[in-house]
Every structure is written in structure tokens, then in C-alpha cells.
Amino acid sequence: MGTETNDRRGLWAAVGSVIAAVVASACCWLPLLLIAFGASAAGVSATFERYRPLMLGVTAVLLGAGFYLVYFRKETCAPGEACAVPNPRLQRLNRTMLWVATAAVVVFALFPKYAGLFVDDASSLPAGESNAPTVLLEIQGMTCEACALHIQKELDTVPGVIGSSVNYDEKSATVMTDAAAPPSHEALIEAVQSAGYSARRAVKQPRMNLIEDQ
Image 1 (cartoon, one colour):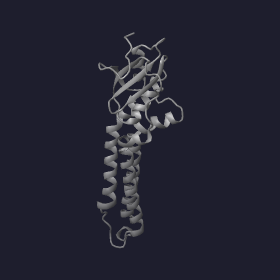
Image 2 (image 1 turned 180 degrees about the vertical axis):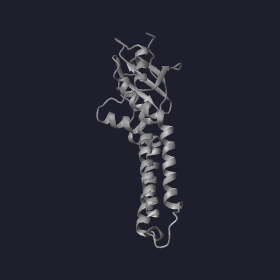
Image 3 (image 1 turned 60 degrees about the vertical axis):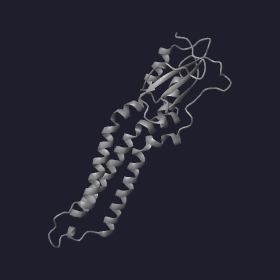
Image 4 (image 1 turned 60 degrees about the horizontal axis):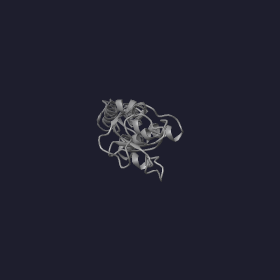
């Protein structure tokens, strides 16, 4: 029974590592899921990002424990006991499941690196509005391209915003505003903060006209 018990424990450790990896990457995939269903994702990304290093650590420990139990730990068995003659089919199954779990861990743990493949351009800027006043914001706290879409959705809810575009690589947001009733810069910054990130008015000029301070 000893070897089979080790295999079962190793398999459960591997399952736990997959769950931890899923939680660790929730800062990127969960906001996308919520937005896809039309729900608010305010603060979700920042909340899970705070625990990402811890959950990745738990993932590594559990996965390492799984490999140790399945491949390296040996039980002391008396002659004639069941554990003295391990079941090769069960061992192969558990080892296969362990490697499947490992692949799943890699897929989820690295999700922030390729999340952009599942994200459309984080822009709602309308065409033909090049003369509309715009504001450029510097964004801090984005960890993947999914964050850019999340911020863009929040900025678009601010009264007076015509459209916005958030660039993950440049850590910036360009916000097109209504010239007749433009939002204050504080309102735009608060929208970013409500999404769980921080922002400030950028010093450099955006590509379009910048509105005066409100």
C-alpha cells in the first residue's frame, strides 16, 4: 500500500499545484471573464496580483512534493506486503497525471505573458474625432495586457469621456473627451484607481490635443 499511497499523495499535491496556479493567474484571466459576461471587474486584478507571488510559491512547493512522492520517496515494506510489489499500471497512470498537471501549471502560471493573444485592442477611440481634446495618463500597476482592457472599460464609464485607449507596453492611457463637458483629471484618475491601479497626468503630450487643467 505504501507506494500506492505515495502516488495518491503525489497526485493530490499535483492537483493542488494546478489550483494554486489558476489562482495565481486570476489577476489576468478573471477580469477578462467578468468583462466578457458584462460584469464589473473593478479591483479584481489588483486583489489577485497582490497574492500572485505567494500562490506561485505554493504552486512550486506542491508540484515539487508531487514529484518527490511519486518518483523518489520509497516506503519500507516487509516481504509479502502489497507495497513490496507495486502496481506498474497504477504507477504509469499517476505519473502521467502528474505530468499533465505540470503542463497545466505552466499554462496557467505563464498566462500573464501571453494574455494579449486573447485580448482585442484596448481602445474605444472613435474614428474621425482627431480634433477632440484628449488627456494622457501614466498608468502604474498593470501586469498583463488584460489589465489594459480592464482600465479602458473603467475610463469609458466616466461622464464626458468619448473613448479611450490603454497601451500596456507604454503604461499609458489616452482619453478622448467631450469638449463641451470634459471630465476632470481627478475623475479619470479615480476611474483608474477604482479598477485597482494608479495613475497620474502624463508630462508628455499625447498625439491629439491635450485639454487644459480643470
